[in-house]
Image (cartoon, rainbow, N blue to C red; front, side):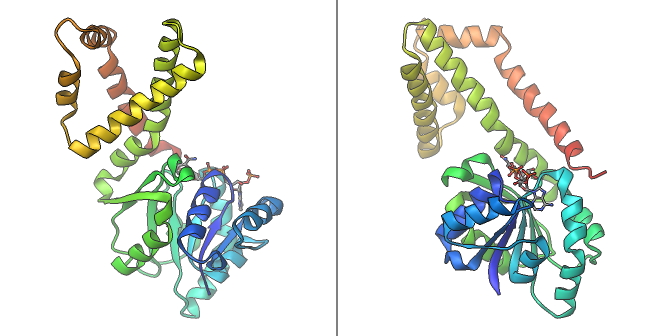
Length: 276
Ligand SMILES: NC(=O)c1ccc[n+]([C@@H]2O[C@H](COP(=O)([O-])OP(=O)(O)OC[C@H]3O[C@@H](n4cnc5c(N)ncnc54)[C@H](OP(=O)(O)O)[C@@H]3O)[C@@H](O)[C@H]2O)c1
């Protein structure tokens, strides 16, 4: 049996399969996509296996990672259900891994026709930086899987970046921060760059310096474990340019804008996974 299959060879399927092929022998990795050509090209690039259908991917592997958009998940689950049930009857170990935002384990169980304890389901949400091996994946605690199964999955995907585990009550709050913040940070970086251009920099210089400012700040904060306000106070000298900028941001509602964006994203998260 192979170790892991990725159903869907789009953005996240490609990112995670790439990480898996760096972490373990690519011959242990299987990809599949509704567009066969896409999976074949990915498999050639990664030197891993591809199959033509989703049930084949289920049959072949221990871990099955669902990497399709929420609106296509029901079709995939209905298609693989008979194969999965047959594998379970034969006593094969199968572990479902969901990266599909918002879809609950119970939905998987209902559509797959499997009982509560019959099969482990690991819900996790990687973020986009997995594409470059610098991602961060949150995993939802659940007693359907064992510590060993989780550790093996993390081992296989370790080249995608870091991991943390959260109880169900905090999972959405955590994933909203890790998965929506790249959009907000990209907007912030672009705004910094625009301001640099207004002040006379060339676009490519402004882009680079905006990103370097963000990157170096994040590295410094992580390394020193500083309180965010302490760093802000250290940078803001009396009547200095940084303090004048902070005053302007406060006047324009910077903090409340960011807080409201995250709170609204949290509300939306609950809605998007509802399978019709
Ligand atoms: N992108 C992110 O940053 C991110 C982060 C965390 C989690 N996620 C989750 O990851 C999942 C995938 O997102 P994505 O951005 O990777 O989407 P994507 O780029 O659209 O990839 C999905 C792939 O699955 C294929 N597909 C559709 N129906 C299929 C089927 N029945 N069988 C096999 N393959 C099928 C799609 O083919 P077509 O293109 O032909 O439809 C596409 O190649 C989503 O559920 C999302 O919630 C995404």
